[in-house]
Length: 258
Ligand code: 13P
Image (cartoon, rainbow, N blue to C red; front, top):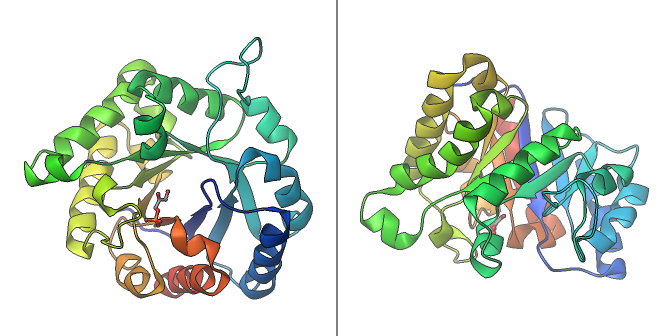
């Protein structure tokens, strides 16, 4: 099954980078140079303290914003956590869930990720769920099994219908920050696998699901990746911290649709 995409989605994941001054320069440049795009939804996901800055600089533009994590609980004595309601208070529309950097460094379990995913949806946020295999798993040929298991934790507890209006980002761990992106062929196979897995369970959900690719996307490989069937856009790390590179990636997304 191939989903016909009418709009691409390109998400900047700034990770733990930036400060008020740098962010301001970057956002001003994005707003100036991306305002003409009609077929690409751009999103900037910044560290929590800068969400107010995103709100003030991006409201009334065609760029949305979001966070890089969310608490699994609604409210309460959870020191250091930030709730979904707090994110919507600052105009967030998106939230990244289960990024592998968090899963490894902060021992985030698949069960936690599943709870955060539905918590985000409950508050009207679009969750961007990260899935992907390690290099060892790819070399062993078990990458589809690994991604399937990551999706199953959500499907088994909440059903496949929760993927309607959600985003799955395929981020092979070996491609993140390494400069070694998946080939269009590798990405094509995994994206088709994910699309088929969801469509076998819930056609309506798959029709309303976007599947992004993330991992060393740059302006050059974006041109090849974004025309691949079932690649609905990208989740961009390093290149989202450089205005020219991020904008070129967004323009590649736009051109792939028009
Ligand atoms: P890079 O684009 O720096 O490889 O990071 C990808 C990523 O982790 C996006 O979430």
